[in-house]
Length: 360
Image (tube, rainbow, N blue to C red):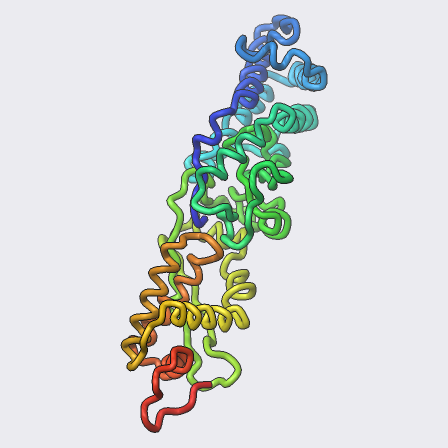
């Protein structure tokens, strides 16, 4: 991921915590052979009044309780373990623990679990929790863009709600459906076209993997410095964009695998005509700054200054990637690249050396 969300935005997690407490109480009373308390006394004192009018929740909790009563004590323990481990989000993503998914739990418990916690997830909107979480997230990120791709913008709070993706999918891990720690906004294409129902905990081959944590990540740096300039082709300047990430680890590899970052950046941003447009932006920057160019070192100095300017723009308007492009160009020009230097001389008006080939 390019950057992480503030974990402080998950602090209003009272509904999830109430659900966990209620389900644990159900299991305890069933194990002890005791009757269920009068509604809504199954919930912690602080939230009973707030939840008392939720008859749909009462109905689904009753169905869940009936299903739990039908299970053996060993199967009830399996369900209780899943309740706990499916919500150890940080440890799951860092592969410090594992959990059973819905299909591994006793058949009689599956639909009641899914229906109960999916309903609870819907209540987050009714109580305004999702809206407040989204607002808090937007107020703390470095730019209102999708941190999973850096390409899609996120709408301002108050606009139609961005997708709050269940990072580990609720279809497999329903006990985490209402857990704010498992909800992270992402752009519509990231969610619908790439992430979709993929499980960050497991690859397409079922292999357990480490994945980026949307709330506990330091972000990455990007380098294009190993990209290849084509010195001979007339139709393109860069024959291959090579995108390197730092740090390199399994979490970053999983992020790339899920969201197809390199493929999307090359296809949608770096390949022409965007590259040519960015060269035009550089020319306009030089003109507006009234730079005077007389030699190649003036060109490379201007590129360095432009790259520093772009780096200062952070994640706005894909500046992070644009900065990496001009950082790469600065290095190649300093090395005397005979394809880029003539092109940039032409853009900036530097006189061509005597007998130099015309820029393509």
